[in-house]
Amino acid sequence: MDWFVAKKLLTPLLYPVPAVLLAMGLGVFFLWMTPWKRAGRLFVTLGAVLLGALSWGPVADSLVRPLERQYRPLVFHQGLRDVRWVAVLGGGHVSDPMLPHTGQLDEASLVRLAEGIRIHRLLPRSRLLLSGGKLHDPVSHAQVMAEAAESLGVDPKNMLLEVNSRDTQDQAVEIRRLVGDEPFVLVTSAVHMPRAMELFLAQGMRPIAAPTGHTVRDPQEQSPTRHYPSAENLRKTRRAIHEYLGLAWIRVRNWILALQGV
Image (cartoon, rainbow, N blue to C red; front, side, top):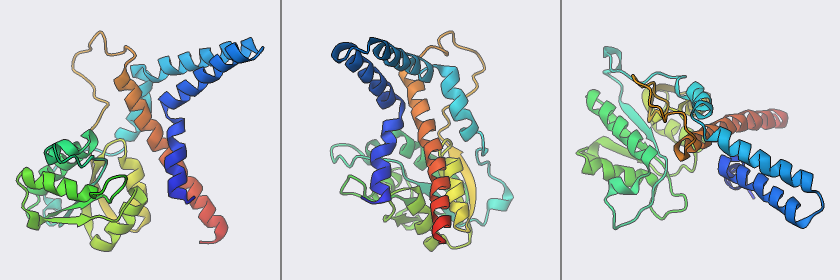
């Protein structure tokens, strides 16, 4: 099993819902199938505490905020006028022919694409570079994004597709081959931007961060239900944990490569 497959199989076990279910499942097992009732109560309590904490707004926001606020949203200025590339990193999609192409993209990908199109229209010399290969789907992610972009009025001649990558590491390598050392705008979700920037900078590239899809927002007025536990907060926590694990994996991978003398 290669590292990519191992990462995809093992990482989800550390997400909030699997972790909570594992703790509670162990608790039920100890309570009903063994004489160790105290251990069972401990695991059930741990699962309940994890579920409550990870779905609570302040906890979710405290995990996501350091990632999303590391780079500011991109505001156009004259220094960007000659930038030739706006690279949009793919997220996920399902190529269901019954849906329009915008409906085949997941929420994160659609928001990234919208931001990429916005910036592309501000930069008269730019082309959209849409990145994402085939992963559990017969159609590449870049192709679905391109068809969605065309349906939103982008000229196909102003798009270039990168269809070989499986993850962000691959995207950095593949986009390096297309862009070289030119400065380019890098569009991805705000929570994903720190990891993406680290990987692209490691390739010796010159990315200009354009984070989008922020989930932590400071409202002008506070809703009384804002701090209630919710599935949306649990989703935020999952995304934050995914990114922290990704950043940790970069460190581990670099350490392994250093030991191997690569």
